[in-house]
Image 1 (cartoon, rainbow over the protein chains, first blue to last red):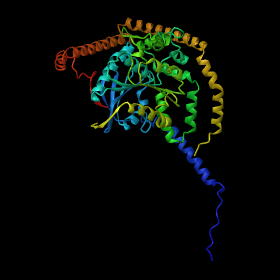
Image 2 (tube, helix red, strand yellow):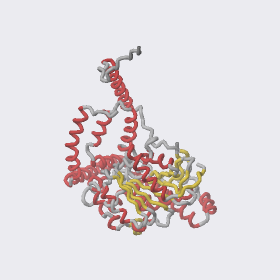
Image 3 (tube, rainbow over the protein chains, first blue to last red):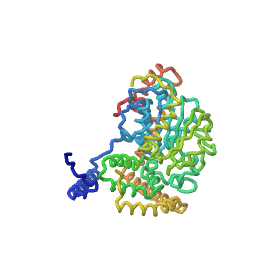
Image 4 (cartoon, one colour):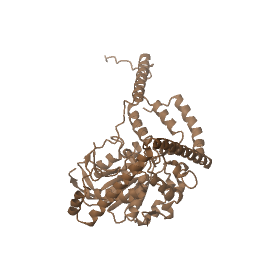
Length: 372
Length: 122
């Protein structure tokens, strides 16, 4: 006689009341604990954690080189950051970092961080960065990369600086030029960005006693683009208060997006005059340091990366770039991301970063690993 | 497992969907820009008047005002830039060894903390 088998249990068993209560209590305890820690500022996001060394500085600008034992790609990459945002967005968190991605792909990664300007820097013009700091930093990177040239990579306003530099210094050792979410046609910039100038707010009225645009004003400008975004961020926080992983990224991202830096006054006034009022790239009217600067003088391999959902630098503001540069090797990469999503988050990690590093790698040499 | 949004969140999202486009249009309008221009001009004028009054008061007691300190710092900063430019010009004019020797002699040493240093960060 066959042994009797146990009766199959129903897959839709009634919920265990004790289990439901335990789960709810655990969740609420976790939420309250996380909220308390957040309010007390106990938890701080670990940002910009990839090991690096400062290898050069001038004024507030510091050039960092990221450590690696596996530098197999030449030339090195120099990341050029915007003047109004903290540079650590490029190296946000371990596992969520553009710098880390490039380093792991074998690149020798450098970052030019402009620092936080104060009254000493109020007279810094675009020439200070484009004609003084950038050429010196590029020379250092080129020297440290064994003279193989430099791939210059500019993000947002850093891209604008990289364009001005590359156009004004065509003899410098630039091997490739990449700009990401970089404004070129200022007629398509949102009014909150382009509203300063002859048509609206006078640039002098925006400067503080130090002679710079205060960080709060920079932040307010960004907030005006999406007035309800801050509230939505708080809603996300409240909804996912029990999700540790989310909270960690939340702290890192909100810390960055609410922590802008002052815009040096002289450079700001020049930006308004050259771009907001003059639309200098498109009209080819840029004069820096007493000499004309033409984007058509850029002849190195060129990649323009634009984010399709960018609300800060909309795609039409960056699209004309491909036709304005003089390079024969021009690539335009439109990625399904927002302004920051290009280099942060799942989409950035799985789609955007590999596409950009792939383009750079195709135009680089693979060499034997050198000592880090 | 996908999270199900709680009711309050669904309500918030509906509210945001209804309100956000209008607010974005408002902040992008020329009227809003004109109001912002007026507000910033008024703010700047108020800040200037307050600064002038406090400066006069401090000067009355022979005390330096923040603007005096700022002016001095800017002058020092300009001097720094001039030194950097001189250093650069010297290096491009003569060979590296001679330049370094001259820079040391003139106290524009290459190892000054404001230029060319190397240190660990992390």
